[in-house]
Structure formats: C-alpha cells, structure tokens
Figure: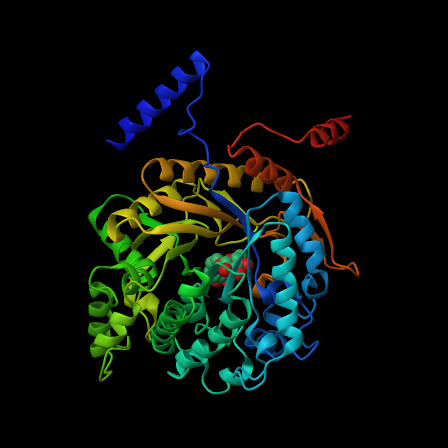
Length: 507
Ligand code: GBH
C-alpha cells in the first residue's frame, strides 16, 4: 500500500516537473518548520571551575579516569563557549537557523545542587546567551539536564536517591523563574536511557556499575523528575509564559535481522526496552511501563532470587503524574539496528540479559567515525510511522541527529547523511507525522564524552589546540545553510567557492 502511494507520489512529481509547475506540498519544508542545531553545556562550555561553577559528575568522572577518554581531552576547556558565546551566536546567524538547542549546567547555577546558593555569574551567562539569541530572532530551546549532575548530589546517591525527583524540581523552578519570560521551548531531560542504562554500566558518569538494578531505579526517578518539572511549569508558569515543555528521548529504529518470527519477536522486545520504557509512561493510553518489559524483568528477577522485580513499580499517583506530561516529543535519532535472539548466558543481571537479544548493523550501511553510528535513513521514517501508530500521532521535534567524521572541512559524508535523513523526514511528514522541527547535532565539534574529540560531529570544525578554540565552517555548514534558506533538499548543490576549491584540488 505504502509503496503504491510512493509510486503515485513519484509519478505525480514527474508530471508536475514536466508541466513546469510545482506543488509546494511535495518535497518542501513549510515556512514554519523550525531548523536548528544542538549542543550541551559540558561538551562546549569549558570554564569548568570558573566564576563559581560547582563540580559535575562529568568533571569528577573524567578527572578521576582520564584513561577512559579516547584522545585524553576532557571538558575542562572544551570549546570555551563560556567566553565565546558571541562567536557561537554569530555562527548560528551564518547558518540562518530558527532555533538553537543548548543545555544549562546545573552546577554552574547551583554549585551545591540545591537552590541555597545561586551563582549569579552562572545565571548571567545564560541570560547573556538567551538575550543574544533573541536579538537575532533565534529561538532558544533549552535542555535542563544533559548528563551533568552536580557532584554533591551524586555523593547523596544521585538519581538512585528518590529525593532526586525533588532536587530536579527545585532546580527547574530556579531556571523557569530566571528565563521563563524569554524561553518558550523547554526540554527537561536528555536521553533518560543514557543517563541511566549507560550511566550505570560504567561507560558514562557517574561511572558506577549497577547493571539491571541501579539503572532501573534511575529510570524510574528520572522519569518522575521529568514529570514533576512538567507539572510545575503547567501549574505555575504556563499561563504567564505560554511555553512548551517536552523531553528528548534517544530513539533508534530496530527491526528483525530477517523476517523470521524469532527475529521479529526479538526486535519487538528490543523496541519495548528502548522505546516503550520511556514512551509508554507519557504517551500510552494506560500509562506506566510497558507490560512486556515489566513481565520479563519480574520473571528473571524471580529466577535470580530477588524478592521483588528489579524494575521498580510506579504507584497509581505516579502513573497519573507521568501520563500526558509532555507538550512535545523530542527525538534524538542517530542510527538503526537489526535484531535477533542472543542465546547468550549471563552470570549477573543486566538489561542485556533481560532483553536476551543481539543487535547489529547491516554491513551495507555507510560508516561514520563512531562504531555505533551507521547511516540507515529509512530508519527515521519507519520510527516515525511506528510512533504514530502506537502513540497516536505525537507532536515531534527531532532534537538531535548527526554524523561523525575525522578532522577536515570537506565533510561530504555528513552532507550526504543530512540530505538522506532530511528526505526521509519529508516522507514521514507527507505520510502524516507531525514533525515541527529538526536539529543537527552539532553546531560545532565538541567533547564527545568518553570519545573526547576523536569523533567530530560539528557543522563547524573546532581547532582545540588554538587559544581561542577557532571555529571554521565545514562544507556541511554551507549546505545546511542553503537547505534552511530554500526549504528543499537539493542533492547536487555545492557552494560556488567550494566548486572552485575542488577545481583547484584537481589541478
Ligand atoms: C548523543 O547520544 C548525545 O545526546 C550527545 O550528547 C552526543 O554528543 C551525541 O550522542 C554524539 O556522541 O561508547 O560505544 O557504548 C546519542 C546516543 C548513546 C551514542 C551512547 C553513543 C555510546 C556508544 N549515544 N553511545 S559506546
């Protein structure tokens, strides 16, 4: 059915081209579609201990274990955006973006984690950034939490402590009070999946390993923290400021390695654990965690001698608090996976054991500079249609999508990937997905957590060895600028000066 639709669309497109008139509904982003780029505080700001900023779990983790960083470069200096935000905004203007997604460093404004001390210099920094953006009509899209918990709160158990829900709500109140008059798009949490599953696997801060136990407790608290912040805004700020609050989930697409039943079943399990676990509490009809996930973890837990399921339960009130607690869904989408049953035996509990699946990439998918990232543009289309079907057409912003390369300005592979994914997004919109905006990860190269600066995601290259962390536009920056300007994806367009460069190279 879909294929026929595609065919008809394609044929009508040809007819339109032949007859020389164009139909704006086809292959074009509407004028109010919001194009943007994204960054996060730890990854770009630097100034880790300047002007009263407190220590975050990423400061602590990478200071304590520098050997885990691929190229040894941590976020102490990063892109030095703390001192260079005006240059960042200049780049945003060069690109012509509609919105800029950045995050607020919790320990920069609340060094103790609590609102007992408000660091005015930190408050001032985001004030300046927001005002600079608005001066040029760029909408700030602000993430409250992008992985950098204040270390003093980690010392009290971090996201494992049920009090973390209140800590986050108190932090959110400070931020809404200070910036709510100017910021209309809020994202509570970036990728609960990474905060918790990666965070308690040892691969990310806090660097604590508590697989299949701590990670699930974290998921519950992080989701509740999100909901509390959402309800706070709804209750105390919405009327006055009329902004929107959402959450950014890391959602990749996954389907069976082949269409054999056992592979399709494995893929469904994988989707329930990586998509449903975070989507269902907010967007499903009944609320709460997915039944399939609850049952699998409960069964395994019992076999392993646990008194209760390792996945904490949500009370009736908690289910209610979470249900419907988002004005939009932020999707961070990077890649897709093929799934099959793993058949592996595990000695100790983990989400991998609970799922019992093995994931891989199709060998034909183009590779980036990151092991985990291959290009499969149809994945974003299928993910969107899946979300529409299961969750009844949520309003969506793509809050991250990106591609990694090595250093160098001629990033053809990023250009190709952006074009392929934007085309797939257009198909998803044409087929009924309510996608309001798209955001490239990232504005510029930055500190990619334990990958350091060995994987470059920037539209702008950053020279980390230069004193002022010099930023230079890559080919992809110029192509993205053109896409934003024209609202269409031209597959063969190159900037004039780039053609000249090319010719020179060939001489
Ligand atoms: C995004 O997550 C993050 O939100 C963003 O901050 C980051 O800069 C961007 O990725 C690019 O790195 O160490 O091999 O186990 C995307 C999902 C999940 C991708 C964790 C990296 C770790 C891979 N991320 N994953 S590995």
